[in-house]
Length: 298
Image (tube, rainbow, N blue to C red; front, side):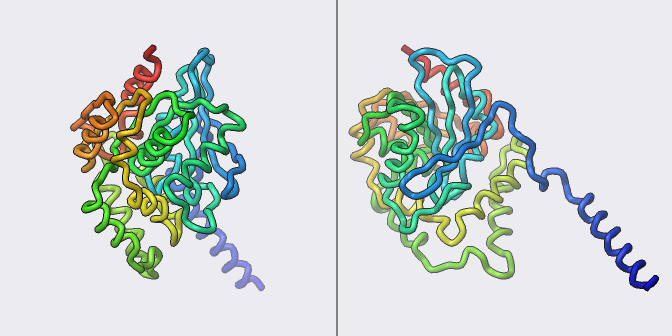
């Protein structure tokens, strides 16, 4: 019995030592000051939101709703959200099937994603909002602003405004039968290596680790929203935009399409060659100031 007890004690000690050796960023995060998380119902199930409340609401400033890149989640906006709550609510949505939002049974169209989100938000935040979208989220926001009357202002960052010739190879690649979870872990290593390689100097490794973790949540359907975005022709949608719009073009490979989107929408264009990926982690205050000034214009 004595030998068994000693072994059990040694195993317990090894387990405790292993737990304390885990780097701090691998543990659950503490609450983000000024940020609330909430679930609301939409046509696809539960929709997860991150909400930054303003210290003081300003009359005439509708909520700002943020749409993320695929296959990430609203978590990519955590650092910038409190800075965008400038007299308004700032709401980052997890697109259905990503982050902590329920996945639809079947893949929606681009319009299906946007309508589900907008209809769910209307009951709690009203029918008048400002929209901000990044990458795939820019496609969702652009589509909504072209079709629905809810949008007052539109901010698009890195717009995937691609013609059919550029979209088709991407669609073929996305539709290919591939396993996102090979047993050797190679897919995860590729995601990690790619995210670290694209990391700007002011984005921490901890932030990269969080984003890579979010990429895993989409599971075997991780490409759904991007496929729906690539199936949509954004050119005629951009030509139909009537609301005041701002396009921010970081140099992440979409600066040309972003400039073309700004031209079609007659939008203000701000090119930032010093920004690439990770701008919401690397320069949240600067990005937010630029957006807030535009949204506050009379």
